[in-house]
View 1 (cartoon, rainbow, N blue to C red):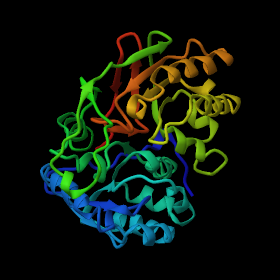
View 2 (cartoon, rainbow, N blue to C red):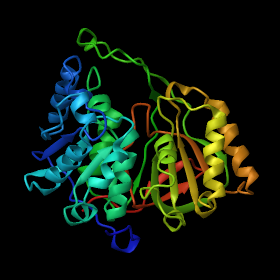
View 3 (cartoon, helix red, strand yellow):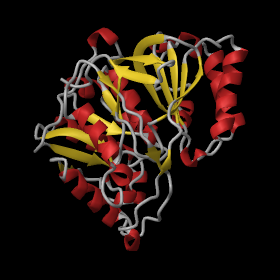
Length: 349
């Protein structure tokens, strides 16, 4: 099995109009449930507006029960998509809570030998760790059932950043900041398909502490999933965190601030936080614990004399929309004084 090495980082080919991308149910299989199928078709159609043809593997639409009971089959679908030369990329249908069950069945060397764009967030954090182990850039960003199936169409902000990250190439790219956000839940009932979610003003990026400019490779994902992976082969070795910019964001489980503190403290006790060059936190879903999380982050960093570590809060990734698509593994620059995150290289070739 190969492991991540920054010097041998592999970048997948960027997507282009006309490409076929595989939609995979690597976590929840709800896309195939009768009452959700319309939502999947809506996302598939809206992705076609970006010039991408969405195709399914054998378990993509098999339904929640079948997908849950067949982690080996889910891994086989990932392998099939990687090996199929007619497929240029892969997008996660949605998250869930058990994609780390795939690890024992996934061929890490196959990911390395057949690199392709992989996009997803939330529980896809586990899949991103498999790509990291293979030394392949993957993209923490939209999934099909949520972002790409948005009622009223994909948010322009999400669409623009997505296209910049996986369909264009650039030596430098500064992420824009959204002006409005939402995590309002409109029930996924087909009768509601024309009901758009309400947007509200975003507070913008918030400097929690630190100063100046730092650089590092982007690493991370969903905070709860990252915590689940501690003690497993999927959790990055301590040296992987050295000089990194760590991305963390909380999910719809809305962890209590005390739980956030416990898990952050564990990362510090493990020596992980001490290795970082910077930390970026996403906006919590529903803005729940918005102020409390800030206090908790400062508290734990203070406990370990990390008050100078640059921390940027309320970033545009994770469980709120619209969102960034972020290439994991590439080098970026964080300027907490100017509230900016800039890629210093492209995530694709």
